[in-house]
Amino acid sequence: QVQLVQSGAEVKKPGASVKVSCKVSGHKIIDLSMHWVRQAPGKGLEWMGGFDPEDGETIYAQKFQGRVTMTEDTSTDTAYMELNSLTSEDTAVYYCAALRGFSYGYFDYWGQGPLVTVSS
Amino acid sequence: DIQLTQSPSFLPASVGDRITITCRASQDISSYLAWYQQRPGKVPKLLIYGASILQSGVPSRFSGNRFGTEFTLTISSLQPEDFATYSCQQLNSYPFTFGGGTKVEIK
Image (cartoon, rainbow over all chains, first blue to last red):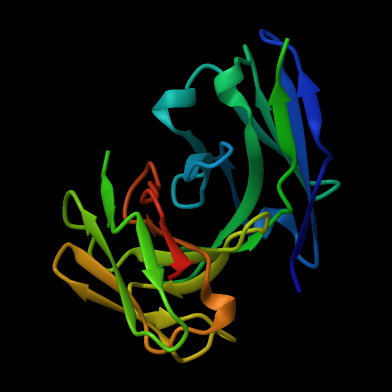
């Protein structure tokens, strides 16, 4: 059984950076395609980016290009998402999710999603 | 980017009702569409993938269909635990966009 356990809630000041971790257990991270989805309070889900297993590259949503970095540490089976130059618009719950599926993709494993609050 | 338009945004309903939520894609995404359920304060839960394939463990009252670029999620008989927000997601091409969500509320 795959489990994704994320780091805790964070409070950051505008202009700062945040790095959220996602520890994978029950599977090797190298065999998963990890993605990140965020959800602002009272809003819908927003895909931020993730690893494309076909190209072997990380794809970022254009909205976050240049401001987000997604990495993985295969020695600890942990994924990371770092977001820079935070503004209040970045206040949201940040989920990691595993893209799976042989024919059709889907996210069936999700982390618990820590809240990142950006406030002065 | 592929846009997904979900309707309605809010759906008042009663236990036992049959309800249908629609998700319209701005271009052809084949059947690369998933549906998720999210209860307040909880993590999204996969219900359906491949437009109509029921995820293991999901009750059979949930079903999905595809009609070209229009997709539907139907709950045949609404149960108390089904009052939640439902979102569609396309996985045909990057970015993997989500619909705006449909909140199913108690009438």
